[in-house]
Length: 508
Image 1 (spheres, rainbow, N blue to C red):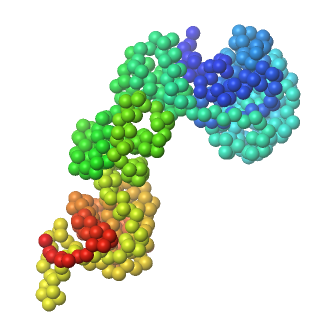
Image 2: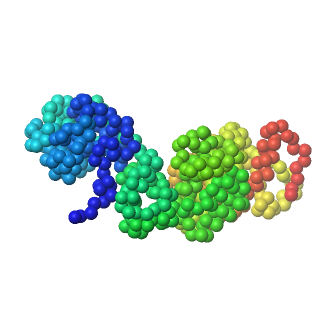
Image 3: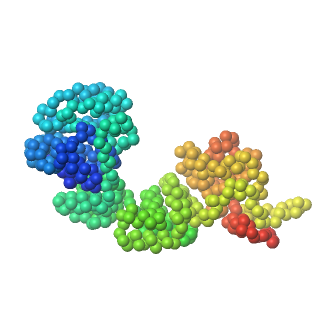
């Protein structure tokens, strides 16, 4: 006998076996028990949540020769024929590949024929939203006045694409993503029956990777069994999924919350030096930050973690503010990490941006546009100004005009909207850490708070790409010049805003 894949072998055969959809199965069970059968049902929800399986169970229940109380017997000839897919009166249509008007016209003609063996002809139309507009209108005609011996089960993962007129003629049931706990329970049952030995944490990880789809989780479990045999360990699941599970995710978040940039960058370099996939590491980092956000907002029940993990998250969340967590999620969540010599740069920049004072991002546009208060004494006009070393370089700002103001207000947006081949480069990442300071004719002066960023931007390959991105936005040719303005200037500026006065300024 040919072996079946897990998701087919373990497909539910009773309404009571459908996992995680009690709001649907209980209603259908009551309707079957009382004989209140509708002529058309619309099952909508994510993939792998039991829509088609429920449609087949419904087809068995209405045609069961023993006609139990709501559930099919699965023992009579009709139930077995439907289970094995050889019942002539249960017709499954894949609307993704049979979406045209001709296929639906053919269906409309056959609908009028009486069932050959069963009590009802049941049409299960999967992915009904894929039907063309003409085919949907043709189906609508049949749904308006269906023959008494026909039941339609329409299934879709994108209900918003189904014609409202079709939806209004169906009883709608919404299938939800299946909880990780329910998926784990089902996987444990499968493992016990199939003789698979595995760790509880491994099954939890498989369930999480299924993202609410039992079918995806079952497929992954079978894949693991085929590759590793009947003994599956947590590390094997992590390796297959490409999950690092590295403790340094938590370490980096801790450094971020404590605003310890040096320790955070050391952690990033440690991860990179160990050869971990930085993109996967960043995905896990964002997930950890999301958990922190849920804890901070009091949504503990939405997190499927152990009590010890949740307690640890609560301790960390107490040390962070909600705006700080939100800022970190936005910064790390939009990273696009490449596998070049600057692979760690996006992570480094996001870390540094996350540790900067939140007030900096909330300055009014008028304040941002104003030139910075001078903290260095200018040399007398009668004598030449001494040349400053690069770390102390300072370029006076001209009065803000429309172009520089427009550039400041849309800085991050236009970097994101740059052509793909440029927006994913180290130059684009460096631009995000810069501030447009001044435009002098065809030169844009960029201010950097960290000398490393300034030095990297001044590399020819990065400067050329940056100039292309900026020129594209300004609609004219523009070159780039970089200056280093240390954080001290920003602190002085903030002090001035709360009433401090500059008593003395001098060159360092």
